[in-house]
View 1 (tube, rainbow, N blue to C red):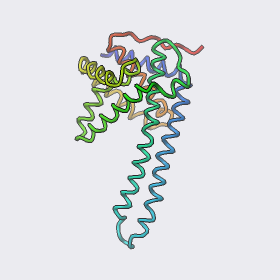
View 2 (cartoon, rainbow, N blue to C red; view 1 turned 180 degrees about the vertical axis):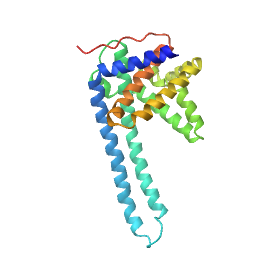
View 3 (cartoon, helix red, strand yellow; view 1 turned 30 degrees about the vertical axis):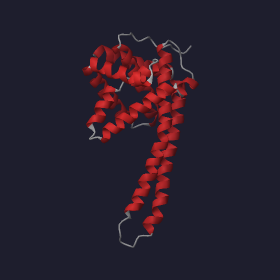
Length: 228
């Protein structure tokens, strides 16, 4: 377990540092889009809520419909953000595949990945969200079982086959998979404090996941190519 985790973390770190330019540019782009959508959604929600709140009688609480309007608009902004996050994930997965094959990803390759990866990421996200809504625990289970679906899709599997491969790989390496999920959760929590770490978070986690996918599948990880 320790050897696999160490190898995958080392691969992810070196791959990101040696190919920082495409990952950084793409991360800045998608982060900017996400920020505009979220901030714009909050501003629009406040703008829509204020007239309704001001129409209430003095001393009354904010009308429930005003609160619903605010959260509805913010939720819509978050939903609009999802496609861009899927594109970011797919591009990072495609770039990771290029690095695994001994190449250096271009900006275009890191920007968006194959449709099968996008669809796989969408399925994983949808299943996990539904699981979280069902008393939370099913979502955690789904998150662990489907952790390697995107790496499998990046390596050529169809969306449904990628889900199947991930479940099979996790079941065969359950203890390692649980520790890997915890490592991902910790890294994600710590990276949320600084902008630069947020930008690097998605590509690093995709590189780490694909590194673990390769190791648990019995394949060695290559040394990422250094920029000339």
